[in-house]
Length: 248
Image (cartoon, rainbow, N blue to C red; front, side):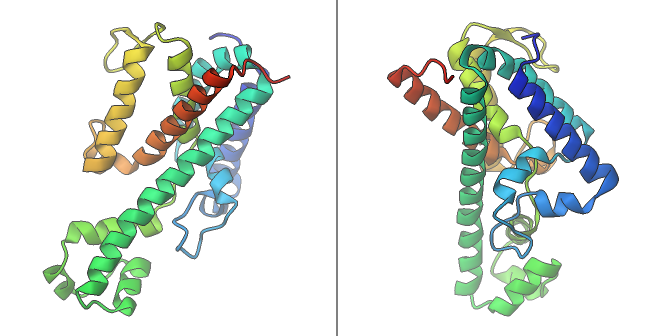
């Protein structure tokens, strides 16, 4: 850590430029570049990449860019810029794919439950587009499930967190004994323990909807984090097996 390497410097600059443009110059960018559920009318194929450069607020981009610098710098110094960028974007794209796949599974489960209960597709579409529904629908499904369906359909994902979780895994596998600490738990813990616990907490929050850091999961795309970690792990194991040391 310490040195601001070339690829990471450029990634931070691009993320900051997108953040400034979306929040202070062209606010409509947030809606067009964030990653929507594919069945939503606002979805665009480019969002699979562009959402990685969008952030919800200042703290969101601050933590992500700090993590990118802190954990990515040693990797780029060791791998070189080309290999690091390939890894970073692969983890980000994989995170988006897994996150979208989990959303599809959850969405279809609830949607099919409604259809099988006799709810018309017109009524379901009204729920998806307006959030309103006939209270009689609560006789066949819980309000929590209806809210989940609506949120999956309408809530876009933003942020570089999926890619950064891949970087975290790569850092932990490369420097397993490096000592890390959370702000709220400032006791240094070896990366080989710290990072699996962090990913485990995201998996727990994604499955249960309960977050240790905010209520109701806090609008955090937990399965994007887990997805980035999974892709990062698979790539690292492959590279370790095939002895890819550096791309020039």
